[in-house]
Image (cartoon, rainbow, N blue to C red; front, side, top):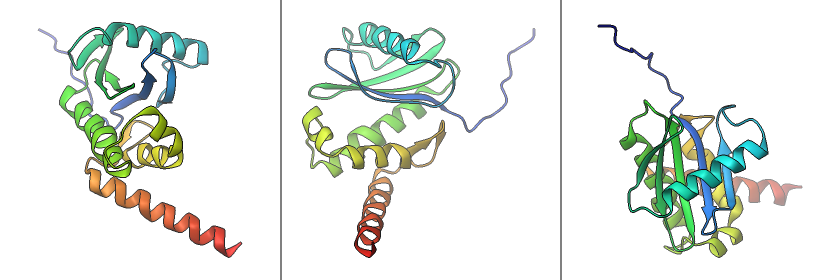
Length: 161
């Protein structure tokens, strides 16, 4: 019997999404060209939200993709990988990114308004944890430390100008 053997790859994450409680995009980072246009991306996001917002499960298979979801007060956070991807790895990224790093950064106030006020830090946290589908960090303290270091460097450069 022929078995499907996949070559190992560092490209684990297909997308990182944050949707509001209406299913509209708050933040989206696509790591490949599976959904090349904004129209396709928004349709995928709406479908993902509709399939996951009504259930209590954290993991779903949608259209050949593994979707891991967690919700906060008024936001839904998603990490998406291929159908062959390890759900535990995707959940570790989601926990590190949104519920540990952001919770530390926002003093346990992970909600839409707080993220809007701290979008720069939010973008930095996302970039520190995964870049173009490659997981860079899974330790939330390290991620927050890098964000703080980056913020200090930006302040230093702005003062030098």
